[in-house]
Amino acid sequence: MEVKIGIQNAARELVVETSDSADAIEKAVTEAVTSESVLALTDSKGRRVLVPSARLAYVEVGGGVAGQVGFRS
Figure 1 (cartoon, rainbow, N blue to C red):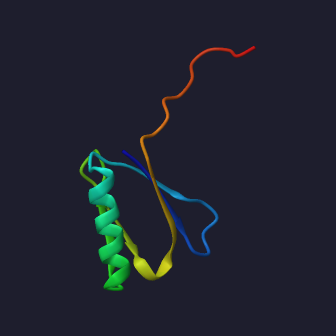
Figure 2: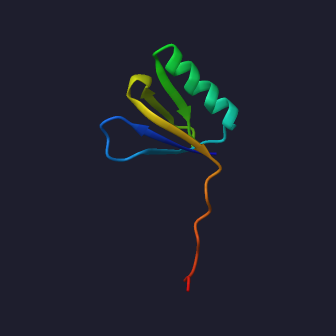
């Protein structure tokens, strides 16, 4: 599952590829924002990504898009 996280005052978004379900990610974001704590996600390689909930601009949860190979006409 691909998760895009927008962070306030940052030019780029943070993209995390995780094996968690969309419901689990939504629950983690909701809990972090409600309790004003840190959003913690684990990516598919086992690394932890921590973002303070006060700095979250948006969180986009999607399936990810496979890259296209070859030329388009």
